[in-house]
Image 1: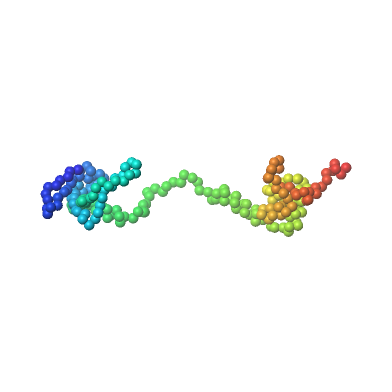
Image 2: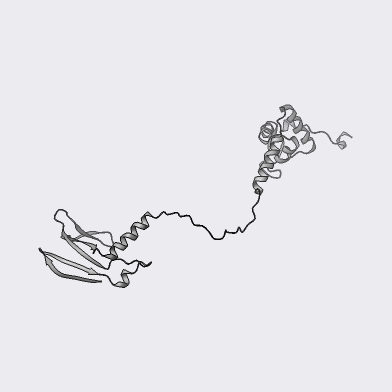
Length: 206
């Protein structure tokens, strides 16, 4: 960069600087930035501008007052006009553009008619839809009959034996059964003591 101040007019310095050709061509795409600029030096009588500095410890100090300010402006030339034209064209160009592909992209996977999770969900929904709520007394008979065979059941097995909607069955189970939360029968249901009228075995009867 070269700075020159060849003359003074009306007490104001005439300052300009020139950028090297290599720097001016740094944008690429055949577009150059203007390499010649002028510097406008103006006073700041209507403003109070100061320069401050901050130390590593965070202390702020006043270094001085700004007496003049300088504004850099490119000199109007063909290079400058070409640059502004390019900027206007880029601003008006849409961000999304339609581009026709010469070859259609090939899928790396085979399409499926449905996903496994969706199929399982639909089957479960159909299965639950077939379960019709029976009268409470009928469901109780089914529960007691099941516990005549075994003392402990998990919830899934009871749903299978009674064919009742899970939420409805659980409501009835909470009335006549207790849920074990400790070993050795953790997560299993059994009848409450007042409902444990198990059938006697053949050995007891003899």
